[in-house]
Length: 276
Image 1 (tube, helix red, strand yellow):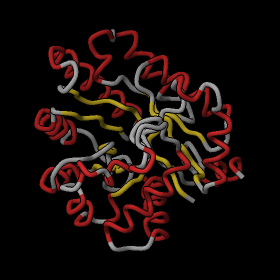
Image 2 (cartoon, rainbow, N blue to C red; image 1 turned 135 degrees about the vertical axis):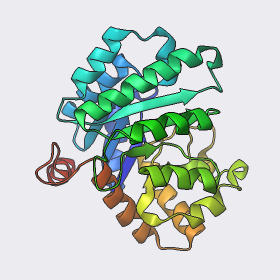
Image 3 (cartoon, rainbow, N blue to C red; image 1 turned 90 degrees about the vertical axis):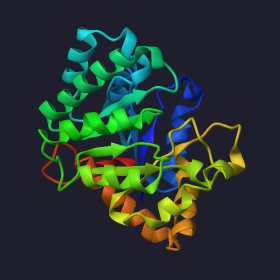
Image 4 (spheres, rainbow, N blue to C red; image 1 turned 180 degrees about the vertical axis):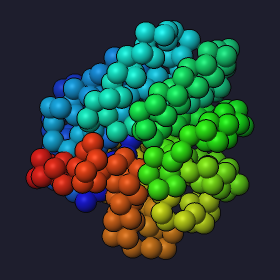
């Protein structure tokens, strides 16, 4: 079984065939898809989908690109969603100075508030960061000092990682897994491959970020969770390991960070049973 640790199936790109996309993913061996909310509306929709379709889970959060328009009520509502059984993380949250750099103060405020929501609800965080790595690491270093890990040594996930090895090590040392998608195979990502090759396997996750960032051979088309099988093969090739090893280990890693174990808020056995 594979787990797509980050997708956005609530977006309009899937309105015409969402059920078929989910069914195709399950047939391809993707047992669980984690839908990452980006604002209050999409977080609610991700939760609704998790209640409506087998093998779907949700995260709830306020993306940095909506920080300027977010208010205290939005933060309160995300906190309420965090208590729902099928919400397994707070995210995606973080900082994005590539777009919206004029709203840095708002982004930092909302990011810190979301981190506190995660801490209060004992949930991992799903981090988005673009052109803001040093500010992100500075905030996290302070937060980690006051926030115990939620599972083993882990506190969350750095989604769509694309930085250098030193930055990767800093995240891992603070307790963050690193998630990779099909973009690792893009010609523009050649400098990322030595980083991916060097990282310990117990910190790696697979994601599609559907409908974005499809495999190289499908550039220009919609990405889907079923395509994560090719990402597992790509990562295996880069690391010189078998696709089966990558699939089984990243699944176990996702199971650990999202708390998909017996006696926790969500049982992976139940989800797998629903997906069959």
